[in-house]
Image (tube, rainbow, N blue to C red; front, side):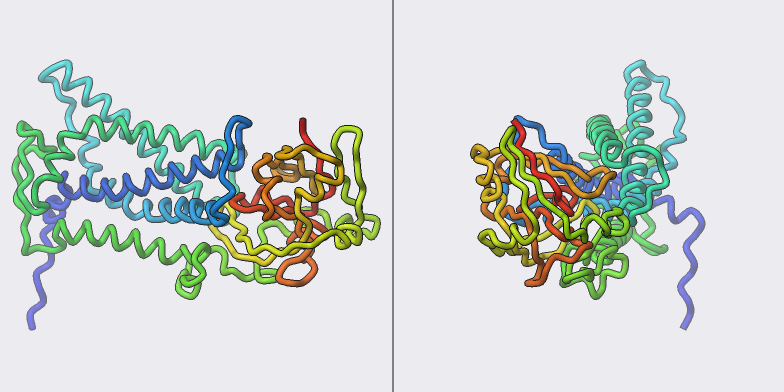
Length: 395
């Protein structure tokens, strides 16, 4: 049997077409939009303004939104590579001189593309590095990632607006139709008919890009979806950990081993001049409740746990705190971005919000926050403060 001839050197040029770029761009735009919306949700959950009231139901809200955020960013990587490959030669096209309007549009397009590409690469690269818990930079990842997200989405909107005629023409025609000449609104200098007999087709390239995006998601989504953990070879969290729940920061890493195991540990609850001090034995003597809640991290992993402890509202009642009181939580951990956090009233009032003392029917592991930690519905894991030493009512 004779082997099929190798593709000619110029056969790949037929793949670099508005038909391919537009279709891959649609999928890439969906990924960017999903990552942007879920990223904004995550930002406001972590830095909730006083005027904003967030839902506490469904309890898995953050688990889903942040899982989608990471999945969309992961899927965007192969799509972006194919998109850039299909259009990069246009970045070196000659500057049009037929009119001032054409020149302005050309420059606006180039600026938007430069900003969009730079922002997209920055977001995807730093996002992947953040998932691995490696921070080779001095800036704050969270605030910088959020700021650049607005730059990326803004430049994407400008880019779509500028290229809308080309996108419409490309999407309204069959993918294998010849490209229109430049004077008809196309991106190529002359009409070019695809050579269906040589190598990969345009349709095949788009399908390959989408398949690669899906494969990338499956290979990483096990951190969020337990059913995929056996095949998610790049999932950064397998679901394993003390008491069946993964750990980001250990007690040793937080420097709290001695303080957390000190028999003299006391929890202080303060509301102005009223205050109560409780030992762990005192906490265990209060009415106990059990809740099934997920803990979900900004890196995209999540796990379900059965938590036991005292309702936060019951603790606040000990100092006669008002309903829907906002509180300040302080950890035994002396340093770190989240060694103290605030909890809005909608969460303190929720009956599912506990000061957890146990997990999976056993005393809380020290790496999960022994002697006491917070667990609340629909909250990022970084705000589920571990090793709690003080609860202060804010006025």
